[in-house]
Length: 95
Image (tube, rainbow, N blue to C red; front, side, top):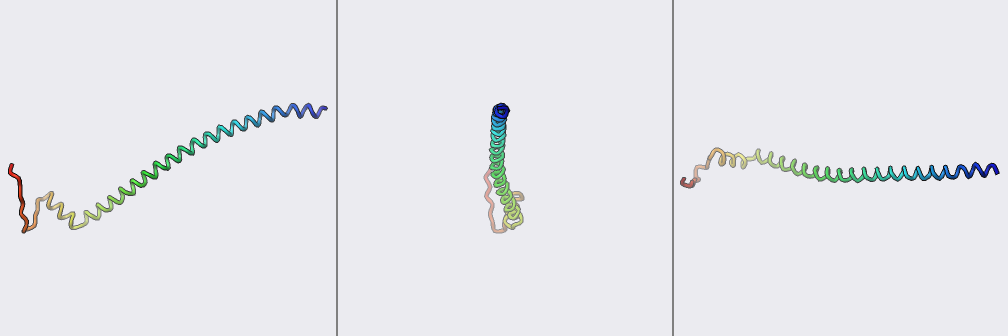
């Protein structure tokens, strides 16, 4: 009979321990799931920002190539310096 008393005395302790561990694990899982969602959202945000920066990089490379072209030099000379070809006529509005 002495064995049964110690066994029954341990049962509530083990049950309380198991419940406590389940509560702690549930809290930890909830915390991890919350962090997972934050990181997933941040990853999506950073991915879209990366795409935007890649497009910007391509635009800058295209502009760099354009600035090295004869067309850019011609357009700049026309717009900023007012230069024209010999056979061109310029029409201006009267003030």
